[in-house]
Image (cartoon, rainbow, N blue to C red; front, side, top):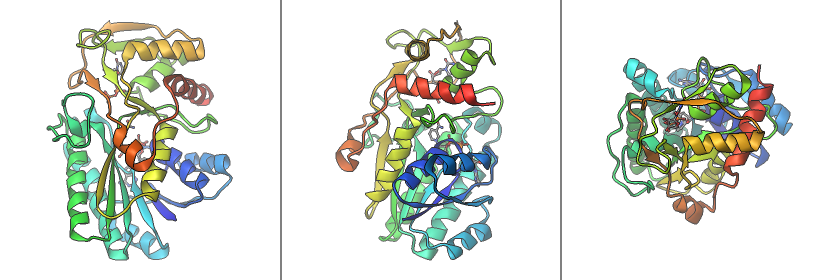
Amino acid sequence: MRILVAGGAGYIGSHTCVALLEAGHTVIVADNLCNSKAETLDKVKQITDKDVTFYKVDVTDEAAVDSIFATHQIDGVIHFAGLKAVGESVEKPLAYYYNNLVSTIVLSKACLKYGVRKFVFSSSATVYGENEVPFVETMDLLPTTNPYGETKAISERMLTDAAKSKSEFSVSLLRYFNPVGAHESGLIGEAPTGIPNNLMPYVTQVAKGKLGKLRVFGNDYPTIDGTGVRDYIHVMDLAEGHVVALDKLTSGVHIYNLGTGQGTSVLQLVQAFGEANGIEVPYEIVDRRPGDIAECYADASKAKRELGWTAERDLLDMCRDAWRFEKGYV
Ligand code: NAD
Ligand code: UDP
């Protein structure tokens, strides 16, 4: 199939381009490079030895998106083109609502206009709010605590309504848990600008000596060791999940958790990083980070049952691959 990957130069998008190309699909990327670099796509070509068509466009620009759809006979869209920093979304809510909602509207409208049947959307476990773990797709969603989370919940509803209005338009809403790690080659990975917000890139930068020590946000949660528990998933497993979701997408709206189903605490991750890479990461316990929940992990059984997909790489693989990328990154 010919797949338009919006946000394909970014972290998850670039790994998904690799997985799509390796599965034999043709890839067209639309990205405005607001949080990525075009060179990443050269690395994608290097890894796969296949070509990618790239448009540097903002996917909120309806005319630019229309001209891509008019030029290529697109069979499916994967929409990664979102702004994703939770804290920044509180400071700049309108920028987040505009970018994340208008991009979804523009891309899905173009699908309806050009008869593109398959749409895969990057949602997030954040839409569950502070529900009971494990999170199951059938749960009622609770309010999220920030504009970023709201853009995911609203996009899910918009796409659901669009699919209801046109039976040929099928939507897969993929709720990611915590993507970490990098492609096994070490050529592409997560390269946040500035000081990372997320745990794994913070850990790799401490290991590299770029940052002093990890600050562990709270050790008084009701969890195995008091630190926050998350469901970390290798980014290549996540990428492969998109290929299967796209291949198997049939009419209607389908919601899948993409996680491992395993909860890991901050201290367990630090320990696994040491074990995988032989590097002890210094840390200190500090106050809880506002807005953090104690535990977040998936019931991953629906994706297994309906898509035949499960995450195959373990926490040691995630730590090893994240470090391999960071070591080589300048
Ligand atoms: P990323 O920032 O690395 O990738 C997003 C890409 O989209 C970037 O290349 C950026 O330049 C591009 N982009 C953003 N707005 C655009 C626009 N209007 N037009 C064109 N390009 C645009 O982020 P990521 O981690 O790869 O996340 C991809 C998607 O998955 C996002 O929607 C994010 O909200 C969602 N998600 C990410 C995580 C995570 O932990 N990384 C978890 C859950 C959901
Ligand atoms: N965390 C931490 N120190 C950091 C970054 C994160 O202790 O520098 C903790 C955070 O409190 C949470 C877990 O690590 O319990 C995962 O945080 P991340 O920001 O990676 O993901 P999210 O909170 O969005 O699930």
